[in-house]
Image (cartoon, rainbow over the protein chains, first blue to last red):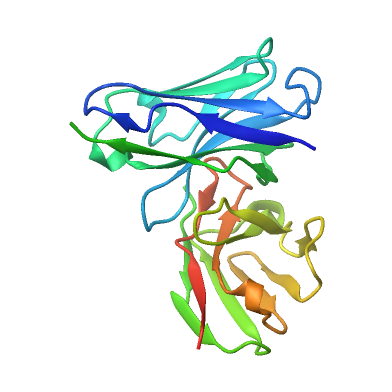
Length: 120
Length: 108
């Protein structure tokens, strides 16, 4: 059964770079032809898609965050990663990784999420 | 970007009652690419409905979706205790994918 698990620091200082990793188990990133994405949810608020990556490495991002986001994949570790630079308190959120089958598709499998707080 | 507006913000109902949730888009949703998710406290969202009206694997048939263009509806025919949660709509027909702000279904 496919599972996704986010990991990374729970506290990041303002102006620094937030770095998270999503580890995929129960399946291989390099052989299943799926996309993987990052979605975040500020406390008590709704969901925001950050960006996605194909197993080949091609990426696409939400224009609202594009200048600060980098998503990469490491097929040898069965992981994909998120970097968000120049963070502020507004980036405080639960960050989820999730799978989707194609460029325009639903998120059908989600990680449990990891809370990241931006504070000095 | 397509903005999704969900109503009502909160729905107070009793178990066994029917729930009707609305999602309105700022422009037509391409190919009816509209989905619904359920989220319980401390949990990730769970996919319920995709393509406006198709139930995801394992979703009971008391959940149904309908609509087209800019107006979409999620109906829960008879609320079970485990259905009290927050529900989000999402359009995925154009990039960026966007979500509504959510409707909370609470026990009356």
